[in-house]
Length: 344
Image 1 (spheres, helix red, strand yellow):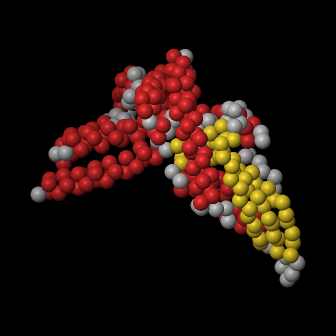
Image 2 (tube, rainbow, N blue to C red):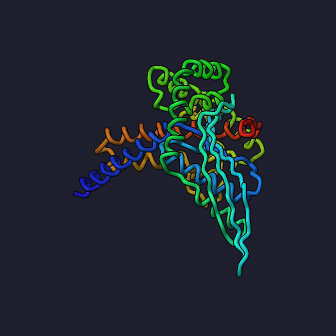
């Protein structure tokens, strides 16, 4: 009876997890427009810039657009300008500001504008800072005008991707051949599922190829780093590096062998306080043993395999996203994004 109960629980948890995984996977394939706030806007503090960014991220997510910065292709950025500031005298002076917020969606490389939205906002408070804070809190994140602003941009961007799909594929292929895996991932990852068609499928296959290349390239580098740490007798650092190596990479087995040597040496050198190999996160050995010993898990192998496959795909997408984000930060560091925002 207990085994049946466990099986039912795992079955329902697997179904729930599967639905969550599908939702996450769908979100990962949304259209990407990076919300980017200028490093400085006259009269605004860093905290106020952060509040504007939060508002814009909420705005785009309301309409099915991923806004966190992981594409250097299209950006959405604000221009906030205070055009009137007056002080109303009384028992306690009140500051009143009138401001204008312009939102611009632009292609970074060409500085071509895809959509513009304007909103006039006011704020008041016992200081100019309070008045500005209130004006930011009044920035709308929903409405017909906002929907039209984003819909127009989305239509134009999808048309861009469809018209340039083959070119993007060829560029990505060239980058992969040149082992510029990071750049290939950053170029191809943002292509949204809505592009559809054979070209989109080709891009996804090339994206997987680029990510496999990235994992293998990173693995080799980390293996060398780990060996360097071992030569310095920094075994703990070496274990940490080896634990970060993905199971999908070509040199994962070599990394595991090296881990075992370090752990066996640590066990042999211990004074009796350690009774087995060092425990490290990410190895997966204990999880495999638990699964083999748990009859409820083996009772639903098909669901488990399906869930594992979905989990693996989401993990890969998450890894691709991290690489694309890193490339976005590198690009911004080089000034490309900020130059695009300053033009026009």
